[in-house]
Image 1 (cartoon, rainbow, N blue to C red):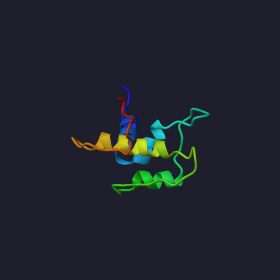
Image 2: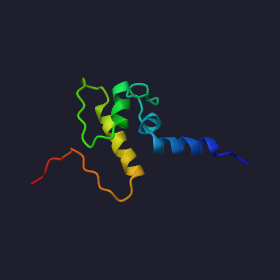
Image 3: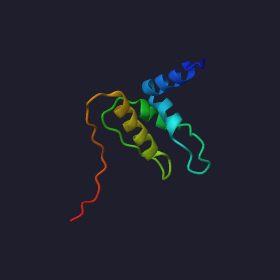
Image 4: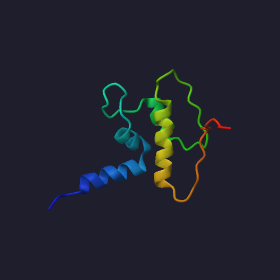
Length: 92
């Protein structure tokens, strides 16, 4: 009989800690291996601030951090709408 304890623990960890979710879904652009977040990304992911601004260099992982944070909120909060700063161009 297979044991699912380790899989259940990993799933629970991703629901509790957004950094664990980042580590399980974000891949490096070059190697395609699972990536570890930078210290500033860990801080941003665990922040409870309603608004955040990332002042970093190009290709530093801003989108990965923001997307993981949004995904974590969507997975852990029932029936709440979250608005992002993304605004697609209108087609007239």
